[in-house]
Amino acid sequence: MRIKTGADWELARRDVLKYLGVGVGCLPLLSAGRAKGATAATERCLAVIHTSEGYRQQYWKPSAAGPLTMLPDSLTPLEKHKADLIVMPDLDNIGFGSGASGGHGSYGSIYYGLEPGKISYKKPNGNTFDQEIASSIGAGKSGRPTLPLGVQLDRSPQSDPSKPASNHCFFLKGQPINPILNPYQVYMEVFAGMAPAQPMSGMPNAAPDPSVQKLFQKRKSILDYVGRNLDAFKMRLGKQDQMAIDAHHDSVRELEDQLSSAGTPVNTGATCSPPKTGMINISDGAQYPAILDAHMSLMVAALACGVTRIVQLQLSDSSGNNINFGFVPGVPGSGTGYKSPYRNYHDLGHNPVLGGTDHKRIVDKWMMQQFATFIDRLKAVPTSDGNLFGRTIALFGNHMQDGSNHDGNHLPWISAGNCGGYFKTGVCLPDHQPTTGFMGEVCTAFGVKSPYKETLAAIRA
Image 1 (tube, helix red, strand yellow):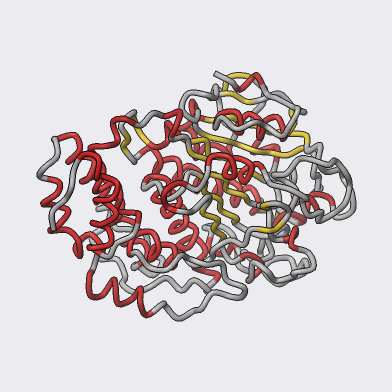
Image 2 (tube, rainbow, N blue to C red):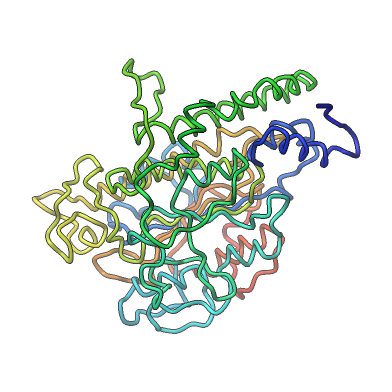
């Protein structure tokens, strides 16, 4: 097959993808030489990761506003990224009062911020800020405005249709966006050219998808399947573009290792023991870390490959009953009996200390480690102007201050990245800044008219 050049480039690379039977995740392999014309301003990316039950403030909140110096214990996993952070420890959620159910009830409206009120589990009437941006910048060539993912949300993303705002926090025109729970579906769409991944209305199927198994078993890697054709194409490029393709090869192989290792970490050379083989059981609660890890890798891959410029990940529902944190070292699987026998987010929030050990503090620190890993992966993706992280703003959000007080107004958010130079980082904001101010600034960074009247000039570069 002849690869066209010049004015026929866009048609040519689509033809190549169709011919090879691969998805849009392989576009960077076919268009490396075209990346030089891109700029950070036109390629800015947004990632939103949302968790629950707040943090133990005495271990998470920096001691003073201003430049970040010594990080408190729960934030120490982010030490090497300190200069890239904006810590927002006490944001005012003006779109939600203390109301019934406290912070739990603000879950659905946390990224909306309009129509102030005290109605618990209020469903937004319009777009959350991520969708406001997506609606303005468009879906691009992939047809995906955003990639919404979730990890075992209340064992179902639609467990209570009468209260969508209890397990959905992203809305488009007042309608909840159902997250995709199955990382294999996303992989098959992005890299193997299969049907678009769909949200699931019930528990993920414990049995691995036969089509995914066949792909891993027979092809070993999508890159092995198309490798000869892509290697031939690579020889027509300059050294810098060849290096970009090789780096993308490595990231895709690492993703495939994660998805085929049954939840065991990718072998990095620290041990001579071979990794286990098999598929991640996505309905097994103990596999939560592996599913989360796979989703984070897919988010990075989707941004790197131009599948979308906006990715979202829900780590729990409004109370976090779906996560039994027995998989975190130092945290038992059995809890205090608060509404369940498990040591889940809800139990930790109301009873952080058990047997003299502050398990909530341990979990808070573990969550910050996951965020640090996500940042590492963004920084590892080379671009024509540096790396993917340099183009991105990544928010790790929460809808309450601490599970022990249910406070839905003094919110602890943290972001990373300057989004192509728009944001000033390495700072901790003073208390009582508005959530809408931050969300409005993100809209502005994307060139989108903000629906909010509040601003946060202190975080503009």
